[in-house]
Image 1 (cartoon, rainbow, N blue to C red):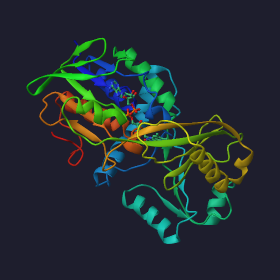
Image 2: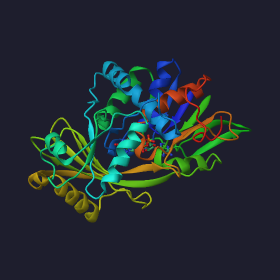
Image 3: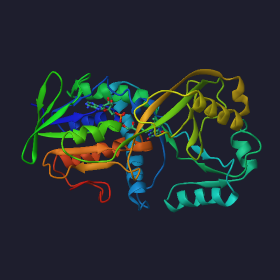
Image 4: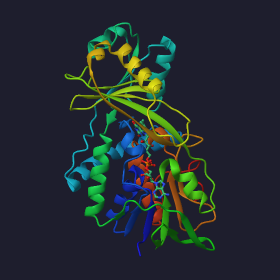
Length: 364
Ligand SMILES: Cc1cc2nc3c(=O)[nH]c(=O)nc-3n(C[C@H](O)[C@H](O)[C@H](O)COP(=O)(O)OP(=O)(O)OC[C@H]3O[C@@H](n4cnc5c(N)ncnc54)[C@H](O)[C@@H]3O)c2cc1C
């Protein structure tokens, strides 16, 4: 019998499994499909900088604590799996096509107040940094510490590192029910097996609400669809992440350029729409005119696990001694995966959590 069963093998479940296995726990991860093919695969892999010495709000603290874990986390995964995740400090620029100078100055001030390096630059400096951008763009904020990871490779590295650490990986095994004895979950049911364990974690992404409902627990996690367009552009017109609010460009080292993304509340309908793809391409062409001749490679969509506050649920489920949740990371699950793994490891192994999780946890 495993010490801990994780329900969901996206970036959150696999990162927790890897962290627990590193401490000698016996872990089994169940996924209803193949591992790491949902939101975690579909994401863009942007890792926004943070500074734990200055961050104060729950969101900025969680982000900052995760940010400083990333370089070591990526290096360990590369060493243990032999797979390069392409984690890099590529830098980023927040652009302002439809924003006033005071709005973009406020963006710079917000990052600076969090202790993050952020420089307000004028259109002349922007053109020097990014000569392929539309020359009509005005002031911008340069964020030299912005990072990225190539998430499909991150998932492969996590899977390989988990397997090497003895994690039992069970794809194609949906959890369809929980057995309880008083305050404890004794086992989870799947179509073919009933699986007993000491502790259980629901990390089922956008499906976490319905999974936890089977255990009699109510949380609000809603799928929020995001669509992405992938172009091949050689040479790349930028090597930095370029953001305009919720829209962005993410360049990959091999000449791919991601253009994202939408935020759509359409239930579990994972597909692309002509309107959204056209809109993303138009956005791309407006900001980087040379993209008009780029090769359209493909498009995809994913279902982000949206929570009411945008912050994840992390912690023990009320009225359950041994059932935990790590879900609802919305737009930040890749970025927050290392700190989520560390916090859940601390909670599951009875250690004192590094961060005060008030506002994020259901119960201590
Ligand atoms: C277009 C897009 C762009 C994004 N960009 C970024 C970004 O740049 N940076 C960032 O940090 N985040 C980004 N995100 C968000 C990020 O991808 C998510 O927050 C993160 O992947 C959530 O991980 P997860 O493991 O909780 O969910 P998922 O990856 O969805 O994994 C959940 C897993 O649970 C399994 N499951 C569900 N129900 C059951 C069941 N009953 N039994 C067993 N298994 C089950 C599913 O099959 C799935 O594999 C983006 C997301 C999208 C869609």
